[in-house]
Image 1 (cartoon, rainbow, N blue to C red):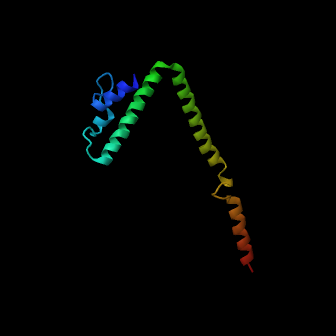
Image 2: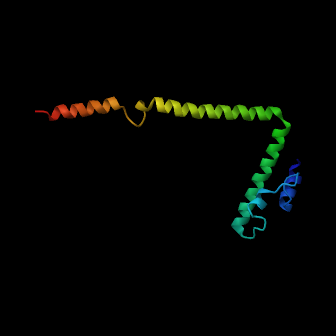
Length: 114
């Protein structure tokens, strides 16, 4: 997809090649006369165009799809690692150590005993 053709297609409101709707028309922003609403519509158009181009690249380039898959796998493993190690090492975290709390309570109890 030539970026100029895709951009022209979006501006004319025709959508992607196979007769699909643009995000702008799906959101009801086709006739945005308001200044701030027009800015939102232009941003939606830019995102729509970027997604169309990215989809085209993903469709044509198997190594790009593989790279995206590896990236997503690494990000998910990293997030799972953060959650797992934070839960396992919570005694060193900001929650404090239950053993040290018990020791403080025992010390306070012994100090108040006659």
